[in-house]
Amino acid sequence: MAENERGSGRQREWKLKKGLDAFGNIFGINICFVIGCLPVITVGASLAAAYATCIRLQENEEETVLSCYIREFKRNFKQATLGWLALLVIVAVLLAEWILINTQTGALSLFYTIVFYLELLFTVLALTYFFPLIARFNTTVKQAAKNSILLSVGYFFSCIKIVTAWVAPIAFSIIYPIIFLYSWYLWLLIIFGAIMWGTSHTIRFVFKQNQEAIEQSAEEAVEEAKKRAEERQQLEDGRKLLKDAEKSRREKAAEAAEAAEKASEEATKEAPDETPEETLSEASSAGNAAAKNKTAKTEGASKAPKKGTSSEKKAEPSKEGKQRTGQSGNKGGGQNRNNQNNQKKKQQNRYYPAANKTKNKKK
Image (cartoon, rainbow, N blue to C red; front, side):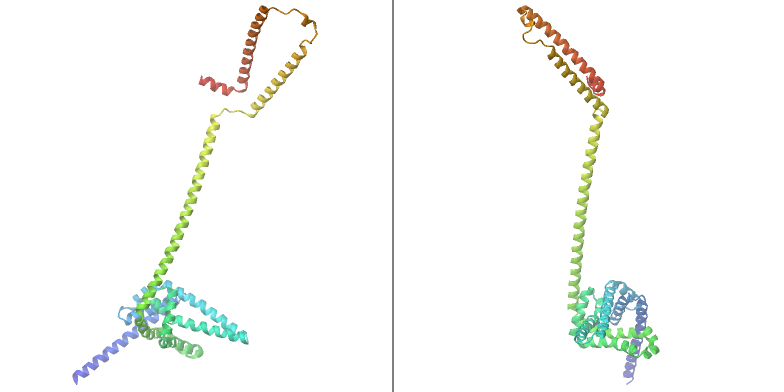
């Protein structure tokens, strides 16, 4: 008898200790959750971290609340925040539809009412296990919503328990504000933590029954996300390569243009400098020389003897005389040609001094 009483006393002490530990954990989780929800945008991350802390403490994976909450808050911040923002958008759409239903009448109002309740049902099914899935498994927002709907439909009774645990106290506080006035401090101290601690038992049971399927779907979702990220990276790399090729092409074209400009500048430096005035004077002198030659030809033609004159009647010279005159004529023609060449050289020296200097240097 004494041994039985000692055994029962130890069990009571163990249960009391376990209950006190659970109460302390609930209190700590509630305080952490409320503080994490203060920025409003972090409500999703705070909820996921609180659920992760509850599940790990119940499975004896963690010993302290604060360290586990902070670590899970950081780990699940991105996915949980995206889910929370999506939930806010859905709630805003549902409120707009509810206002539209109240303003419409007849068949149109009935149609919008059916659509509203269907959307509300899918929202509840997707939200039941959404944040616990993000807290427990490495998954994406889309895959977490999909798995939440499947688990809610497959374990509908468990879904009803979780929804009731959340909706009932919030609905009573909204319908009966006097209850909230007398119990608002309990929400800040223990009610949120108690709801999450109680629903975590049901959630753990459902997760254990479908852990392999959830992990497999989560891995597939992660692989798909990695493939998409790799495809995006490949596209970005291809765009960078195209930009680099275009840039190199432009640089080569610019270098070729610069080289052509340098070559043209060097060519202009090596060529003799001629001013426009020199070229104009050269052209005018050539024109004057041509005009003088024309006038000389016309005068020579006018001085030539006409047919039937006395000069023709003169005796023809002998052959020796013709040869002498031919030789003298050739000598005179050679002298005239030399004189013309000297005059041309003088004119070139006048109009092309730089070119003559370069020729003399070369010689």
